[in-house]
Length: 129
Image (cartoon, rainbow, N blue to C red; front, side, top):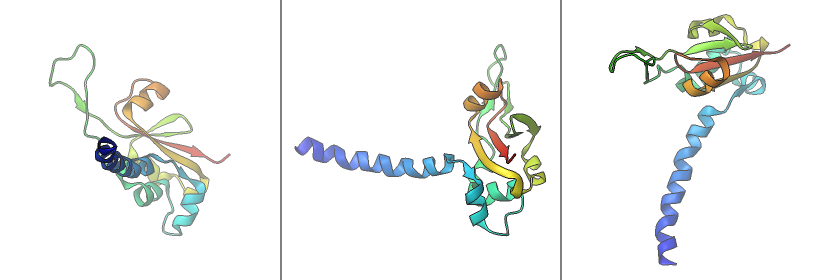
């Protein structure tokens, strides 16, 4: 019984610390964008207002197999619209929120498994059809 009492607070702290990360990974939905109000007019505005951490520069260095240690380049965020690579984050500024069904953030590994070799994380936009 005493042993359980000692481990319980540690488990609770872990669960509470993980909750904000889960919220950051949750996709942005059209409903959430509508609730954000009139100040959100582009997909960039939606991400910047609702999940600003998605726009932070990744802290990873991409190195290709066969390159020497220390060689590589900084990971970059790419935007995919309906599974097509559209370039960097600035492309989000061209997408009106009225046409957005959802926006998701994918890690470099998730992006690589879905779209092929990736230079960094991806913000994936799905449009309404």
